Amino acid sequence: MLGTEALYTAAQTRALDQCAIHEHGIAGVTLMARAAAVAFRYLLELWPATDAITVFCGTGNNGGDGYLLADLAHKRGISATVVQLGDSGKITGDALMAREQAMANGVPVCSFDGYEMPIDGVLVDAMLGTGLAGALRGEYPAVISSINSSNLPALAIDIPSGICSDTGKVLDDAVRADLTVTFIGMKRGLFTCEAPEYTGAVQFADLEVPASVYESTGGNCARLDLAALLEQLPPRSLTTHKGHCGAVLVVGGDYGMAGAAAMAAEAALRCGAGLVSVATRPEHVAALVARAPEAMSRGVSSDEEFALLLEAADVLVVGPGLGDAAWSRQLLHRSLASGKPVLLDADALTMRAKGVVEDSGAGPRIMTPHPGEAARLLGTTAAVVQADRFAAVEELQARYAATVVLKGNGSLIADREQTLLSDYGNPGMASGGMGDVLSGVIGSLWAQGLTAIEAAALGTCLHGAAADVAAEEGQRGLLATDLLPRLRALLG
Figure 1 (cartoon, rainbow, N blue to C red):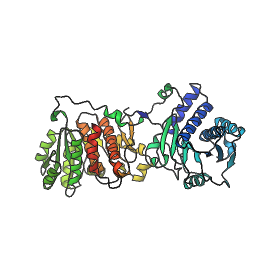
Figure 2: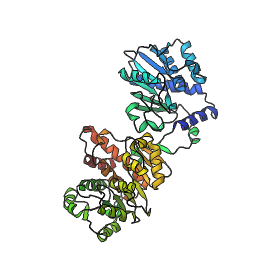
Figure 3: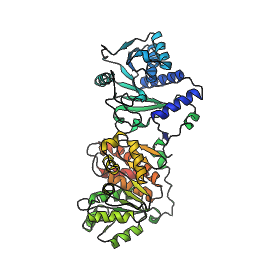
Figure 4: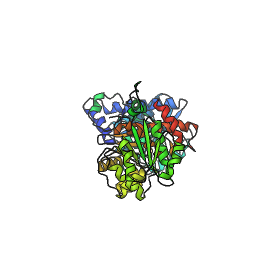
């Protein structure tokens, strides 16, 4: 896989845990003690002056981690109280051993009924962990609400309670943590959908599990690292000329939307494409030349004019400002039938979803939908897409036989073999034109010789990272064109 950090579902993490216990002889309570020690260490690093903690424990192993953390704090002379949620009679196994140890060492334990939230100290969420799959029940909604309204710092053990660890979806409400410490397997839901709003900083510990344990659970999901991806770009030879660096053709810019095509073209240029052309409405050529003189902008009114541009291109970026007119449909039809690698974005995706233009499948495809476009392509709603972004991107990939970038908070990139996650980017990107820039970035990298998945992965990370650099001057008012100089700087 291209990613440097494997991501796991809850079921896969449990399998890793069981492999460590049953095949490598590491006792479950030993793993629990290691988890508690790591979480306590991070707690002290972030809040070194704390003299009190309150640990909210459920009835499962997540609660066991919490009991042992409370015991460590108590031994350290820090006031530690456990608030037990659920029926304590249901606690069994390693979690019961942890509870009994903490209570034997003098850690006070109380129920939530009638409990008054503290006015200071650190709160620890050890309630539900990765086991939650449905709506919150019993006392949990009230407890989570109390934690969030306390204005006290909070640490979540493994994952904030209320978040689905497989999807990142908040199931009802969730603990808003300042720090999440997760163990054995990095949970894929921590970095996408709504989860980043709740996790705070995320720290990971493998609990000294042998490397061979991870070989036993075949995962196909990973988190991307920009520095590692940049190493895929070979240095340019001293004899390099523009013909060696790929030719990108941007197809778009219907009436009133020439800016979208211009931004895609500029992004392609800034990311190193040797030649960039734009096929657009004849009326827009002058404006495009003024905006981006390095791009060869051509007015297209006939198949013959377009055929000449297609012939010279290595990669087509189709969709920025393309519209849905007869002119737009014809350009999309000719692009898809060209046999060239085609990146489909924006209006091209909308037309594909409507079925007004069929895809011959004559060349490789990259698709870059946002959740609304993904919903149209799948015949569902954006809410359904967001409820399980991993399922959505994998279904898109299978249905359309393309490399797919599902944009959003924690963008997902999928081909037939792997699903990758990029958590670069920030809320300042909620402005028009960002997707047009992304399509130009990916198209440029693809034309320079990267595979479709390599170009999509690097391009998505590069785009988000450029926005992060630009946002250092402020998120509000961040423009898509603000990314252009940062892209070049990051590529080096």
